[in-house]
Image (cartoon, rainbow, N blue to C red):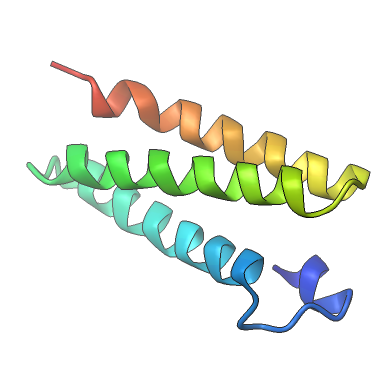
Length: 88
């Protein structure tokens, strides 16, 4: 988010908004997992979906190494959440 705003991207831009939502949802997911909440599967599912959206937006929005790195990191995040979604 800091890189995007430093480049002049508005704080209410879709990419910044998605990143903020992703960070907030990751924090919620961590708390749910720590508490062994029954809702942790749902929060993991939302993290998976939002991480995938961030990756797609970052990959398509700009063709620079920093955006591609963000897309890669968001995809890793989504992949990390996936086993939690499909856990027995």
